Image (cartoon, rainbow, N blue to C red; front, side, top):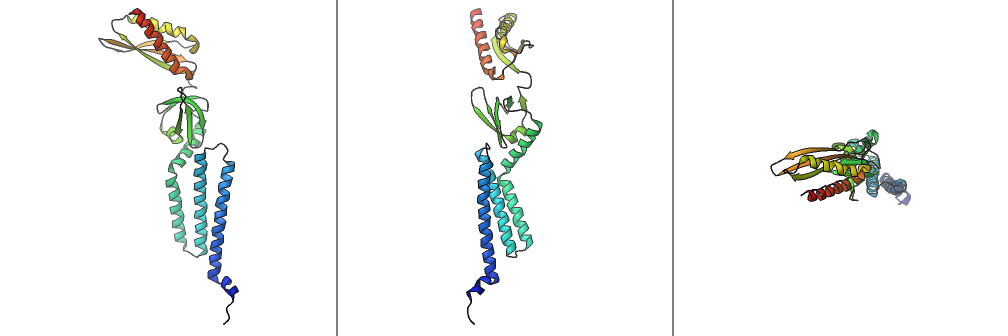
Length: 251
């Protein structure tokens, strides 16, 4: 019987091998095209998120390609479903934090507890919101430090919006010897508050409260409502400096 090379390529095993190679090549090209498209449409999306989207999409495309290949080879459907389940579970596990942050971003967008440019306090951090994307929120502190907060934390922690509350309430602590006349101390503090009236809310009234009294020292708080949250630390420092300068003159 004469050997015919055409029969070699038209046999069933050969067709399956060629089909598998073709599917593999197409899958590779689709993955490359997907990565290029994601890169071009990313815009201002953080590079870390772009890389994550590229990896998740690439894995999903390769998984689909493998399933098509196995189906071509007549692999039982149960095995295909198991592979699909394990692949999806692997991606969810690997990108659990990213997916959580993205879901949290949607909740923040819906309820809008804050906007870019507003001053917020969360998890011990205080500053002006610079940026919020699908993964994280950036705030700029009064010390000119950038704090990056994952969006998932925004759902688990209390957010204090200092801008929408009509100014920022500032508590300025001072400590004096108990022997000093408290009425005079109160007058000093209110006098200093009057000197910085331009930084306070127009309708606000400064208050002085005694928080602790001991035989040696008395602790007080000067309560102010300032108009510009960005000046909080500066105002606290200036008030305490002026107060202790007056206190040294009194001594």
